[in-house]
Image 1 (cartoon, one colour):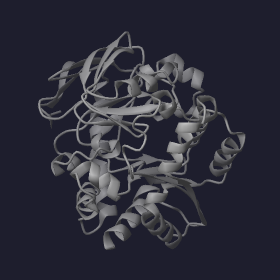
Image 2 (cartoon, rainbow, N blue to C red; image 1 turned 90 degrees about the vertical axis):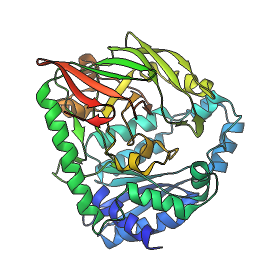
Image 3 (cartoon, rainbow, N blue to C red; image 1 turned 90 degrees about the horizontal axis):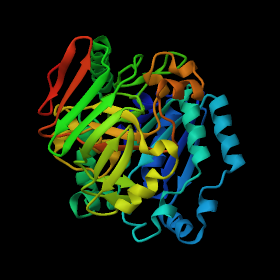
Length: 398
């Protein structure tokens, strides 16, 4: 399947931008075997020194959630922490494939156990990437994901939609993404120049005001590692984003696309913020999963990201609800509660976690994106120039 080969080439050369002799860690489900093989071939062809697949499996995860205790599901595994440190020290890059093979596999199980995971391992991996480990996260089409999107396991149709979103339909997807990344970076520079202190999202069911930090930096398109190598952490990406002041969020949001948390699909989600914290959650279904997720740690109820996306997004233009947050968050404006990005504040990468927290960045083992934009959404900012219009009715006007 040619599209898989083009996909793999983009992920390896445009995503992690693998360098000669570099190691690659590949997180993948057993449902993604064909894609994992294509990525491995592309990585070695690009000069990778080694590729290590880290396998997961949905039914095995269900067995664990059914039978293991929360304590065991959350337990620290020293060998896993040591492995992450070794990858970082070796200068490895990593790829994560997303795409639930059975999105409803964990339905009916204890929400607290579904939400449980080894938080210290998550934090260790985040420290590794925040300190120079290149990474990219991409979607992996499969029959289960296709059934969730289209009501039938039409993988060809899903590949077509994913290919459009990832620009695989263009002659040179890697070059196309570099061009798009530069446009998003320019939007980030425009926002930085405004020195905004506050951001407001307003639309049907949403009226949220979020405080921004004095030295915040807007990011978009891609990142550059400590050695000056550019990469794309997410493909696709259509956002510009920053990390807000975790202490300043007031108002309500109406989530406009389904959210998937620990394999559970949440629809009709509505969230209230007061004093920087999430104080109330309602949903059409699975609200208990969200509440359990928010109890993960102290930072899980506070914002770690605010992001701007307009109708020009390729994901939005497909008209497809992907039921996959990597894609759906890039269809419209979104926010995320949980972990902040140290690189979203000037000098943040060199700070200790305590220094970042003192400035107002959030720390958490979770990072959950929820879409609040689309038709009718408007975004304004406040700063030295007063109120500045950024997005009007889902169109970038800055």
